[in-house]
Image (tube, rainbow, N blue to C red; front, top):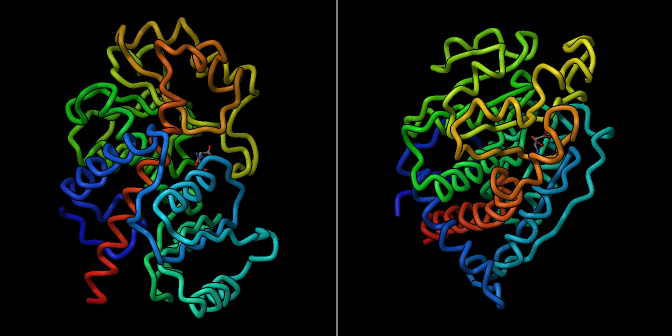
Amino acid sequence: MTFRSRHLLGIEPLHPVEITTILDLADEYVGLNRASVKHADALTGLTQINMFFENSTRTQASFELAGMRLGADVMNMQMQASSIKKGETLIDTALTLNAMHPDLLVVRHPHSGAVDLLAQKVNCAVLNAGDGRHEHPTQALLDALTIRRSKGRLHRLNIAICGDIAHSRVARSNILLLGKMENRVRLVGPPTLIPSGAADWGVEVYDNMAKGLEGCDVVMMLRLQKERMDGGFIPSEREYYHRYGLDAEKLAHAKEDAIVMHPGPMNRGVEIDGTIADDINRSVIQEQVEMGVAVRMAAMDLLARNLRAEAA
Ligand code: NCD
């Protein structure tokens, strides 16, 4: 096994071999999760605290389930985003929690970099469950596992990431991971939603869906992140759907066996047509959720092994 990190803060510091190690172990946990008894003991005796300073359905639920299935004592802190506005408050919270001796701390925070800062202040392993528009490493890993299982490989694929790239930590972590694994990544969206530095990321940029999706193996759609927009990034949702919403006509430009992905939550009729999202022959959106639990089990298992090795 090759996974040496103390924390999982982002995809950026990971070596391709570490990514493969997480995915291989996650593959084993997919089997466990499909069995009638879903218990293993990789985290027995350890304490996992989930701290979500931002709303979450899938990510929080799957981290919670992942910890429970591996035997950890799991606690969810009720965090009110509105009461945590200052860096000091975050650090104070971290120090308070640290005094309770957690082993794994899962953190989602609206500010980019907040989770890295927190990791410097505590003694346990920290997992980033999404920080601002910076990174969301477990999402990129579960997307990678979904792609690898569906396409049989995770290299030399043409992957289009479409929509609101500018506000998306999911896009950032996916661009990093897919690039490290030697895929061809295209970003497709209106110029207002493509970050200005994107051309330097080793990706191709398109503002037209038909051209951007041409010959793609994977079409990854993103939600319009309105909570991170301060003003007019799009003319109207109707116009946006017309130009960038994934429907059968636009999808026809991708390869015949191209898969459709979305991290959720979806806005049907804004970035994706509901019929495509539900089409079990094209959409792997439910598989993504299933892989999410397995990937989080694998990530916490590997971090716990490193904790034990360090303590020994
Ligand atoms: C994403 C997130 O929170 O970054 N959702 C998720 O974790 N599944 C994407 C989003 O909010 O649109």
